[in-house]
Image: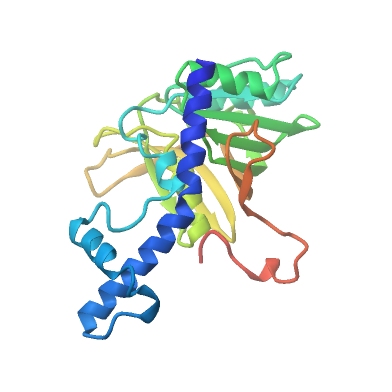
Length: 293
């Protein structure tokens, strides 16, 4: 298994190293294609390569005309099988953090919770790769309050780092009859206001934590972005008076998320390249929205 992981990692890094060359070749083909369509002469710097490039252009189809990136490879097989998630915590978790992770286990279908114990991150990642887990979610706390969540996609990444705010668990809600029981059906997803490039990337990471639901599922999970703060809400709906009267019932938990980093790798790879990181001390940071409008 270790040799297989090393081989897959080398193949991934090799494909990533080819991205620059493929992008340069794509730009050359695009210039020749535009010159032919507009009836203009071929650019001088491309005349020696024109014959070979035109032959490649003739052989391309809609799938090969645009170069693929390693970001495309990360979730290329996500539709082939349901996600399988491992949930764990920082070391020596408090009772509130343990309770929160227990509830997250029901939020994410096909999730398994593991007591961290003395295991280090690299051991957890290797074990998950060996048992075909697709994602690892690690939840942190500060003085008994959950304050951080790391979502790492396997086997190559990406890894998204979120801060957690205003966490309210089902355990904290006194009126248990009002919230009802938590169903385990696959939920419908609502991803609101992830319009910018980083927002679309974040939405892609979040949506692949959930399998495809059945059309008649009455469970809804919402990730709503406002001013780069993502609100997580969990509801079920009922049609008691017909299709035009829908009653929503929140079943918890609820919390806010703030993205602060995306890495092109798994969480055990300290050398992994940063795809995006927030710069809170730059003068323009407070004026800009990174996830949506």
